[in-house]
Amino acid sequence: MNVASPCEIAKEYLEDSEVEPINTYSPLRSASFYIPARKIKALFEDEPYGLTAESLFLCPCARCISDGGSVEYRSECFICFNKLKQRELEGEYAVIYALLIYVRRPGLIQKFQKHEIKLEGTRYLCDADFDKLHREGISDLGLAQRKILQHQYSFLVRTLRPSSDIISIPAKELLPIKEDVELKGEGTFTEVRCFEFQDDVYRSRDFGEV
Image (cartoon, rainbow, N blue to C red; front, side, top):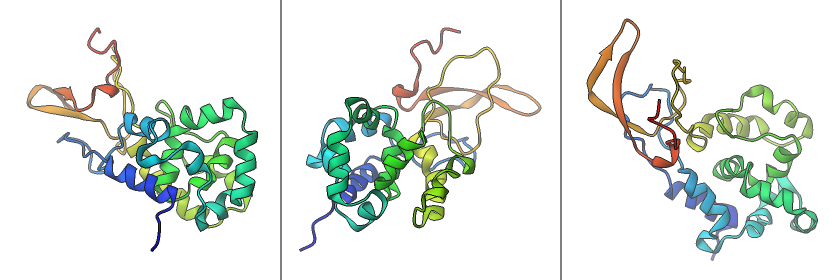
């Protein structure tokens, strides 16, 4: 009987956490689902399905060994990790780590930390961000790169903040909002609609004060 590896269990958890956006007027190229930030946080802090940060880091599957080194090597790395590095996996690198799990390449996380490649704020990755990784001799990196660039918009969702200026948001980005059917205004290039938040975690505390 085959037993699922930690990275497979984590990927299943992320797939079960997918939320379909309810916005009607988003561009056709925008992401078709998103993983709520709270679910990513819970993956590394709440030990769903008995998963721990250590068991994920030391996943013994063939792909994780190929990408991250033997279990013994990674065990030494985990032990030698200072507390700052461990906090990074649960903090600023949590989103990219979850995305690597989703595309079945979590063993690459140490190389992403080494080259400070991460997803945060409104900074999305582009092809140039992978230039240093291409010098690492990583197998099938081109395929992983395409999947990461494709799915990053489902993992990094911007927090909406009030602004007195017009902000342009790339068409591939997903916004977890539900727009009103009734128009509030219409111009030559755009329409104005009120909206509700589908998920309040992406609503900044000062939203609505402007």
